[in-house]
Image (cartoon, rainbow, N blue to C red; front, side, top):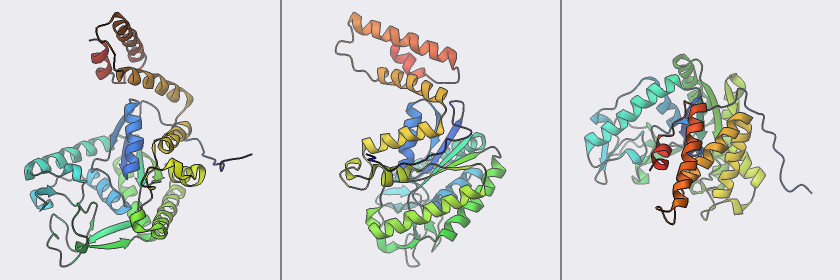
Length: 334
């Protein structure tokens, strides 16, 4: 008896390796992938603008990295006793205007340098809905004019925005223009598209499905157009393969730990070669050992444990000098 829908994921060619530099951008599910790769010691930079949900915001952020855009005080606005940027997640917000600006510009500079050398760009799109500042908004400042799309509403009242569902054509046009600039900036860059399996239930079930459908169509349009584009079916794995609320969190919108782990396992299986996955498993054992909480840190048993792990780390580092085990070495050498 077949209990799951079969899905055929074509292996990535070329596959992702530990020598690659990977930039990730997009929705909150981007950070599930990014954190997973980062913990496994891959060289990653994720969400330099913070979490971005819609394709227009993703495109604007990527172009800003190419241009190494540096924000000024005019690019910020003040609300709820904090300074914010319409194009950045609230993790950049700060009661101190200059501190907010410094954090943003440091991230911009790092993203510019990293993107120019990156081997892979993973884009996870979450929603086709964008929010635009309305004409009468007193907050139509911060570098964004009336009618301009914002990446984050920063809990500002909904009446300050117009909600717009991007058409497939609008999304394709934004992506197309951005991609041409990316390939001029970094000709060797390869791009993986994914659609977030997180359900945006605040939009309603019907509009959420309309939104996701437009993203899927736009992503496949781009993949069919460019040789260096690939599609990883994160959305389909949750919606059509797992297909059960037991793989969702209590909000019934976000995949839970089991659901997320399944997607990450399939990502590794389809996007990495055997050697890379084998090395990743070895590294995961080291990282798990680093998190071990000893019952008695002074015991001879724990000291032998530290010595054994230290020797394993040194062997791995000799074999793979490009990996960074500084944190593990410091811990196991105590």
